[in-house]
Each structure stands twice: as C-alpha cells, then as structure tokens.
Image (cartoon, rainbow, N blue to C red; front, side, top):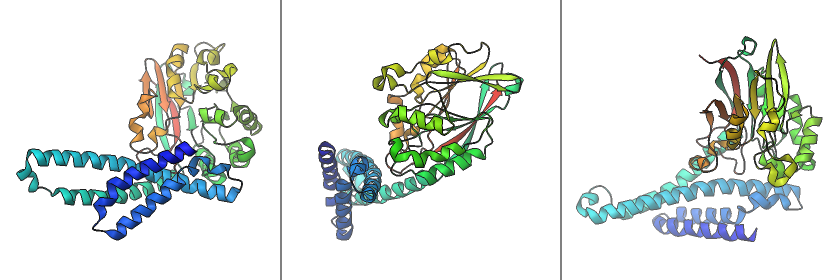
Length: 382
C-alpha cells in the first residue's frame, strides 16, 4: 500500500507538472484539474485495498471511488504522454522549418490547447467507458467450421461467458442480467471460462447465486481462472458444484447430442500449478480416455494453453483472460503475454476463440474492447 501510494503521487505530480502550467490562461480550469488530480492521487490506492476497511459501506464507497479514479488516471496518463510526444515533434518541426511552421501553429497556443484537450478527452473516454462496462454485454455470434462434423452436431450451440469478476463493483443484479441474456440464446451448453469472482465464497456467494439459473440442453461447465486461485479456488469449486455447475479440472465429459457425441474438456488455469502443484494445468490429462473420432472442445481460461491443446488433439479451445485489452491502449500490449487478444484464430488444426470477457476487472471502464456473451455455433467446414 505505501509503495502504491508513493507511485500514485509521483505519477500525478508528473501530470500536474505537464498540464497545469499550460492552463494559466484559464485559472478556473487550472484549479479544477489540480483538485481532480489531488482526489485521484489520494483515492487510487483504495481501488485495490479499500475492501480491507472495517466499515463495509465505507469500504465499498472508497473502492468505487478508487477504481473510477484509476480508470480516469489511466486515460490522463496516456493522453499526457501522447501530448508530450506531439509537442516534441512540433518543437522539432519549428526548429527545422520555423517560417513554414509559424504559418500552421503557434507553439504556446498548441501547448495550451492540447493541455485543455487532455482532461476533456480523458473525462469523455472515462464516461463512455463506464457506460460500456456497466451495460449488459451484447451477444456476439461466431460460427466455427469443424472438419468432418457429424450431422447430429451441425448447429451445436455453446454460450460462452468469461471474466465477469464478481466483486466490489459487480454484484448480483449485474450477473442476473447476464444469466437472463444467456438463457434467451437457447444454447445446447454454457461454458464459463474462468475469472468469475474476485473475493471469497463468504463474501460473494449471494452475488454468484444467479448462476444456478443458467439454462441449456446439457448444462453449465466451468473452468478456473487465475482470479479463482487468488480467491480460494477449492472453496469456489465446491460452491459452484453446489449450484449445479459442472467444474472441469483436467478432465472431460462426453455429451450425447442426438446420435452424435461431443467431448467437453476443461483444464485448470495455466498458472494453477503455482498455487497448487496437484492442479497443474494439463490438456493431455483432460482428454485422456475420450472416445476417438468425437469432436473435442477444451475450456481453458488463458489462450496460451492452445499450444498443448493442439498437441492433445482438440478441435476448438474456448478462452478468456485478456478482456480484449478492456480499454485502449492496453489491448496493444496483450500480445506480449498471450498469443491471441480476442476473436477466432487458427493454430495449425486447432480453432481458438478468445472472449473479450463479459464483465470487467478493476476500473469500471471498457473502451475499444466491448464486453460480450458469445454464441458459438459448430458448422461443417466447407
């Protein structure tokens, strides 16, 4: 907490130093931005640590304030860095071609106008991002072509939800709306691909309870994400099974759909072995003993399980974890850790679908990476 607080102050000092002097012609705006930076600097650490406070009401209020501040600060920081790059280029051009540049812009005016634009755009992006994050995710339909797909499985439909992150700002009504939207799909099965919760069973069991209302032909299947391991994975596995959800931990089930068969396998999170060596993620163990020739679908929280899933002989892997980056520009950095950011991709003879997530983590903000409930249909490859 002290380190986070010092870092927050240092970065806010940078924002103040870069923006406030340029706003001297607008003292009211200068004062307002200074106050806003003080509030965000002091409140941001509570976004992650506020829940530790003894008063639940105060903890919830400070967590909300801290996470909103975190989202706004992120945009202000990125926009300020972009402004500094713009000013650097402008000064370089003014030095190289002073007469030509003088006809295009005046450096002091550019500095002032861009300093005004940073908080204006930051607030706008944060408001739009908040609205996008708090709405119920839209249904996205994806067709997955499978070679030699049995006729009985043509149109087999999987409703996927992922990365809801039930916790301080996502509660029971938010999940209930998701469940209602999923049920309207009329899917053959529901896949929940991890990071359902951010907190213990004791804290959140009531808020997770709507999951029991999910409806489909063959039921709901769940795999753990990394956040389940931060939140007590064993207790959550027990709670989800109590709600009627099938939890797959390096294992599979065979669903008989008409006269066809489809194997639904699931692995523990890619990082699970760091928390419990006995639960190390293993796609090969998950498919062991499955009937030969059946369509094989793997639920794996992180896309980087795909390489081993392909070697194990799966046809389709459903993942989440990335949130599609959640909001710009962080989507540009996902590929540094994961092979896929969002959408349907091919890895040799394996299809991998990566959901952008159905909720959000941290700041209640989505911009450029909308949340989704995914309706996946298996279709024969042409």
